[in-house]
Length: 333
View 1 (tube, rainbow, N blue to C red):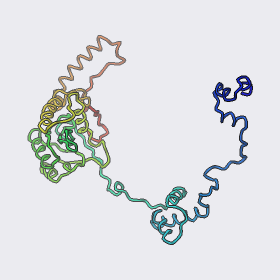
View 2: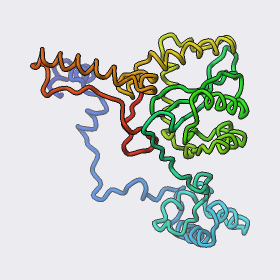
View 3: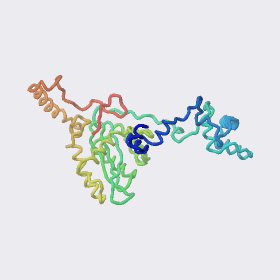
View 4: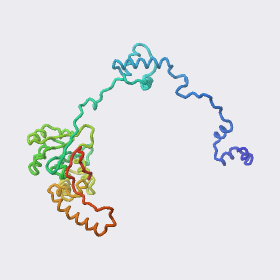
């Protein structure tokens, strides 16, 4: 750098050519002597630092307060009320966090921890008409804060929608009417599963199900995957290319569902049931279609064996479908 400075006649220009900052060069040319035993910032005796004796006193008061169930704020305020100010409130909390033995710290009960754990719903179906799942989803309207409510009942084995309606609000008596219609058209299942919404846990619906000897189950609190079949069906509805997104009126929403439900039941190829339609699985006609598929696949394998490592098999719907069941082989739409 000295030679470059002599050549250019300017140290600033030499530093610019070398790409070195002036402060860096000055530090490197005259380095600061290193401390033999440097003191970390947290251990330095700066003026605002709370003395060790006061920190020890505060820690003892906090620990004594914990022993009788008092919070840090309670102990801080009590000490203050006695005319003693050892440190600020935030400092008390920092000292409390540094106390090694936290075992005496009282546990604060929370809303979640105070509830009795709800039993995990475990449901299995080996055929249609055994387990139904139902839910309500919002259909957006042009008006802020207002949405139409789409009710839907789905048979978890076949994925067929066996009941639906669209209303302006959630209501237990509307849900009861939907189930009464579904019972008349599709028979009575053994189980009905739903989340824990007001309409789902209503007394009117519970009475109807009990009258028909139907066992009802509900999602556990804070568990998002206890009702996967209804959620999957709603996702299929709202992710279709022709889904309008916003419905101008209740009649528009009902007309859309009136077209969607037959399409879903009879035309939609559901990935969770081996790309058969829900109606095919519900009435058993999938077996005939499965035979056609298998024949075509095996014929294709015979013509082009080099394209396969092993003999292919034609997927079929699972024999057992369930909620929180180990043998559940369902998938999303």
